[in-house]
Amino acid sequence: MLKKSWIFLLIGAVFLFTLIGFIAMSLAQDDKPKIVVVVKTLNTEYWKILESGANKAFQDFNVDGQVIATNYESQITEQVQMLERVLKQKPDALIIALTQPSSAISVLKEYKRSNIPVLFVDTEADWDGQTAYIGTDNYELGKTSGELLASMLLPGDQVALIHTAVINPDMIARLKGAREALEAAGIEIVAVQPADNESGEVKLALDHILQTYPDIKGVFAGTDTIAISTLQQLKVNGIQIPVVGTDGTMKMVKSVEDGTLSATIAQNPYDMGYLSVEKALKAIKGEPVAKKVDSGVSIVIKGDVKERIDFLTTILK
Image 1 (cartoon, rainbow, N blue to C red):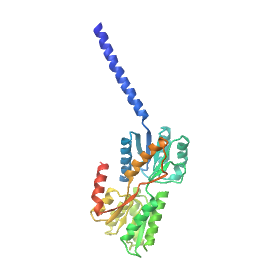
Image 2 (image 1 turned 90 degrees about the horizontal axis):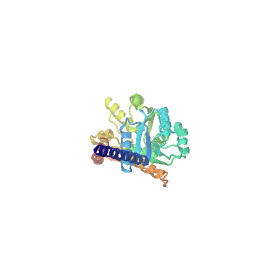
Image 3 (image 1 turned 90 degrees about the vertical axis):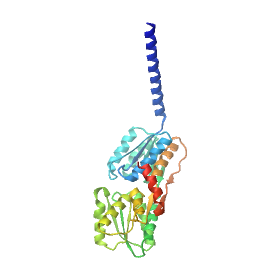
């Protein structure tokens, strides 16, 4: 009888310690700040790089975080619905890359009323309720891209600008910077064409441009996704002219490595992801946060290619 009592006591003690451990683990999990990052899509390399930066910050700062997105960048309504669902989860902070800012401001005001800091990453918006913007100065990005393209051409040469079908303030600023830089260098902009790469519109847009302006000497692409499709279509047509993108993704960098391009422009989406989580934590703690954090841009030339490829290979594994 004594032996059975001892066994029951032992089982009870084990159960009690297990229960205490589970409760402690649950409390520790609840103590973690909850941050949700909503980006435009996770189907492209650019956004996967940003996700990687955010995930590293979640790990470094012990954050209960997640990165979510719609299937395609063009799904504006779906992103708004996603924001409404996230609001019900009551995160401590929201980080958002808006597909179309004007469509989402009403739901973002609900976050503000709930005292949830809202930080914009990658894409700016005209809303004074934001805590901060972390990303590229898109006018400077466009200007640097335009200057790079102009450096490969001669005054009087004709170029085309191809941009995303969905226009947001970032793309407007990017195009403005590129246009001003090209015109200052005496380059003639003969076509400005929208194209939704997910629908194969880059091919149609470029075919139309080449039929109308067969002597174009270069293309400014609003994103690397557009730039890569442009390069592929130019190759099909047996045309080799400079194409400048704006993101610095692996395919564009490898185009510099193999000599298809002499240089490309690179944003820093990894830094955007990491810094946005870091700034969100400051906001959660009530610490001051700069309204604008510029993550910078780089011109990638052949001498820099190996280092960038190694970095991208590591974070995209």
